[in-house]
Amino acid sequence: MERIQTIFAIFLDTWPGFLEAVVITLELTAVSVVLGTLLGLIFALMKISKSKIFQGIANFYITVIRGTPLIVQIMFLYFGITEIVVLDAFWAGSIALGVHNGAYIAEIFRGAIQGIDYGQTEASRALGMTNSQTMRRIVFPQALRRSIPPLGNQFIITLKDSSLVYLIGVSELFAIATREAAASFKQFETYIVVGAYYLALVLIFSYLLKWYENRLDVDKA
Amino acid sequence: MITGEDIHKSFGDLEVLKGIDLHVEPQEVVVLVGVSGSGKSTLLRCFNFLEMINSGKIIIDGKEINPKKDNLSEIRAEVGMVFQHFNLFPHKTVLENVMEAPVVVKKEKKEIAQKKGLELLDKVGLGDKADVYPSKLSGGQKQRVAIARALAMEPKVLLFDEPTSALDPELVGEVLQVMKQLAEEGMTMVVVTHEMSFAREVADRVIMLDKGRIIESADPVTFFENPSHERTKQFIQMVK
Image 1 (tube, rainbow over the protein chains, first blue to last red):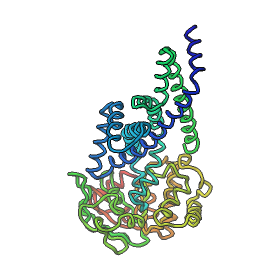
Image 2: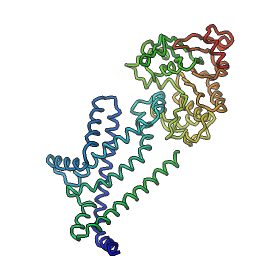
Image 3: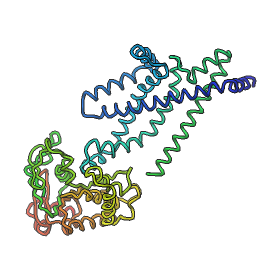
């Protein structure tokens, strides 16, 4: 009982700071989702292209990213990039998360594109459309629609993974939690509070995603 | 209008077309028949370069096509194709399906493509379905939209690859009716089908393929009443 009161007390004490951190977490997530989607699209197209060189580059990227821990990638990028250009921790973290996501999103897009019935491509070609017109206007719009559920899933993972960039000093949600916990000595209660913040964000996002998916279904099922 | 000379096509070790010579006159309706695996669909697909021939010539409207040099998209735009499984674009409305190629390939103005699209949909009896998505249509309606979509490009030849094979029996008639009307209007057509009534009624020429070769080519009356080849007789017995 006492613990529950403590949790509430901590929540009431810390919410202004946490709310600021929520904004940073959302910004991190948004930047890395946009970057990841862009990279994912580029590498998916490279992987399904006829060029062996493009395929090789895409395979290398996907294999390396999926085969190493995110935390290693964050450190590698942060210390690697900042040796070359001046970049603050927020951008280094966003880029690391984006590059990480790109590999997974590339596989989502590739699977969705290859899952579209080949008859769609044949019908487009038979009408005189070029390969790029076929991809842009016929295959990709359908693949994108199919990618939405797994993409949403990936975005949720990104939101949670963004907590790892506290290690390079970004003042996002988890970083604030560690500071609050250290200051108040209430470790357990503080991490429950921050857990609740993440859970709330994920639930809101899942709800929005469901709503969007349903709307798409109603339109064109 | 469209001519194949000594067409050979193999898939790996399997030779599917073993030297096909076929000349289709303007406004002619040619029906290709044969058991499955005889190569009739493959031949059709070679005519619009969905399959590449291994050797031989394809001549469209007097021009020999060199698939390595010529722009295949431009050639395909002049040779329409209707597929067994319709292959409508599910993310586009019926009218958008019909307008897509004229707008994207021919760079037609949207208003013009829309007007022509609606006329074509009226022609296939689906003017009232312009704004629905293909998933809401029956198989027969889908295939009629697919025909309108092919016609929108004003092709010189229209190829039909078993257009009624995926349809419930009661829906076959409406599609054949549209095809018959096209034939009467003078469209050059090459049709792969198992609908012998269509071959009898509409075809100018019926051609029998067997193991990658043309073994019979005759007007429908001769083809069905007095075929010369033993395999053709067996086939006609079989489909009766």
